[in-house]
Length: 635
Image (cartoon, rainbow, N blue to C red; front, side, top):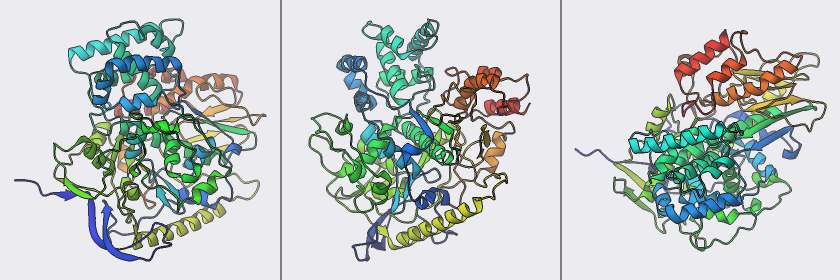
């Protein structure tokens, strides 16, 4: 017996208005809303998180004046030797790359995207960790799987990034890469240096040069790490890709971008609480250039003049080596309600081949196993799910930004999380879409919002502003009194960071596991996150952390303001790495650092337990490892 068909959208007659509510009379028409949608049976109405709109109350925002130093380790500059290697490998393996869905992603690594720090920080200020979106007074938008697929060239289809190596042939290739890595680590470099890796394999005629090439690309341009080395964790991915096996890299990349946006938002918030002589630092690991390019595609007033694409070139080439300066980024972002490009990829560009889901006429089709891969990819972009990365899992909520897909917007419904393990999260992502009807709108269609959505949005913004004002008033303390702890929940483990001249409570979203602070006589001094000097402290779990079972029992699931911040699995590896630099800082500083536990369990002990590249592919997810960590920190 065949299963009854379900739909990804709800079709009904509804009173509709323009997204801004202006220059258009409300009309009742047939509308298509992306599920899940808020039901009147649900109570109460969802609310926007007040902390996500607190920035609307700030009269000015000057990113260059923030006491925050950011290192973008995933934002790579092009290298001539790398471009040469790509040309030689492409001549041999282009068809394999296209089969695996990585051809455009590899070619994109040769382009240089000039960073605009004001734009990046201006966007991060608007990021909301609970809703996984940028929240402006005029609406809600986000970076989606569609953006990562079109701009980044990564596939949303395929097997998970943690797919194991099973056959003897694949194991032989993986072991060869591991042996080469060990050889380089034992050299004078003392680490798997990318330069030495390239020298060892490029133009050597090695049997596994292709796998080594892909391992280099993955380590340097897709999944970078703290030591900027060739990562052992990507070897299995490289081996699969070298044989044309398609892996879902897009959700893994987007998960890392969401994680880093949350870290950056936390760091910006924390930096506003620092003293005049304090500077905080943050390292971003994801390919964050995609966030800036996303903004260039959609914010007309912020984009530079794009390049002309030649036939066969990826869309990202438009933004290669171009730049522009905007005097007031904040004003441009907040005044973009009428000029924001909801569907930039639906517009035709010379020499760029549009995917098949940008059609002239709308269509509703049934998803089957024989469905075209491009259309199936669009269906994945529309489904709320969990994004599984190498070291994090993040929730994906496209129904909150339906107009970016050409679909009408209604009040978004609640989506429970399914991230207890990477395997459970992956099952949620790759849930079968068979017997589901896919609605594909016309590329020329101008989506709107329901009248009740516009009323809900305006009321939510008004209430959030009032709440933010009340919180600011209550946060003010009389001089001479010690500032108490914030009542806000922290994303991840609760921590407390202290400096010589000030104190920051990390029990609120101000503090990120990837964040560090320095107190210095020179405000311009920069703190190295992985090698902190005396007087600087990094974040790591409090010694009284809860067990995994307690966390899972107590976590609150949600994606709106009535629910606490989503449960995010922070990478315990990065916190442990910080201990290396902090050990030296602790010995040199006369002031006590954050307690590490008894003398028997030193920072060196923790370091041994969390070696960089010998961890599993999912550090932080193992219940046994987390319990051991908690036991160590309690002792």
